[in-house]
Length: 350
Image (tube, rainbow, N blue to C red):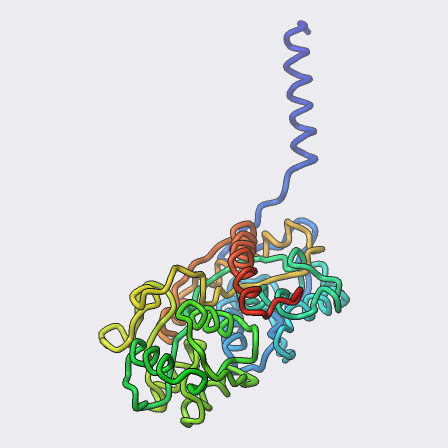
């Protein structure tokens, strides 16, 4: 063997050994079913954790994906409804980490950005659990949903956002804003709008999103920034008027309603408000399993079964991103929200 041949053989052997040490198995579909990883994962049912009631936004989302997963998952996919107080996602991550298989990827948790990630800015989560933002190990983001500003039906000041703002300015501290608790995603968004427009309102927290819609719909509150599904249900029941949708466009069924404007058309600065729905697992879950879960949920989110959601929730748009991009969304939104929360006096650091 020549000296040159020896160098070539040595280089080839080094490359082979290096590749063997760093190679990560790519998820593979066979006959439409995602195959388990070489280490056997998953070899038992996967359980989607919903930290809310079954019929809520997150519960319906979980079941839509569960249905889509029936034909593509190699194992059964279950949904476990484990209602928790608001700010419960971090506590769910901590709890899942203590379960058998929790740090192995068997319990993906439904998550919304910014809601779940922003919790750490307003609640003593790190102090109570030891968890930080890094412990939210995002698997996937699947779809975005805007917030919708609703007001009580046939309010005397008119049916436009401009008229509501003018009425608030003329009656400082008297117009009743019904918030979903204090410091949740939609409350931070509405509080930011109030701050941007220099408004003075009477803020009255409600325990849940459905109660927000019910209170405004009953005329016991003047306005709120609601989840899109809550706003749609109240509007379809003819209990509220819709004035504004966060983002730069107005979705159906209000596209042709001149009384409904986008946040951009209302003159508000650009802001990443709304919901980005997806899944999170403990940070201890191995990267190759996170990637496998991403591949599984991506296929489900792209399915015809799940895509039907776009016709039932105003403004829903599919934006499917993987772990790295989802982590960046989480970090970018927190960077935006941190000074907002501080200016509102809601920051956990005071």
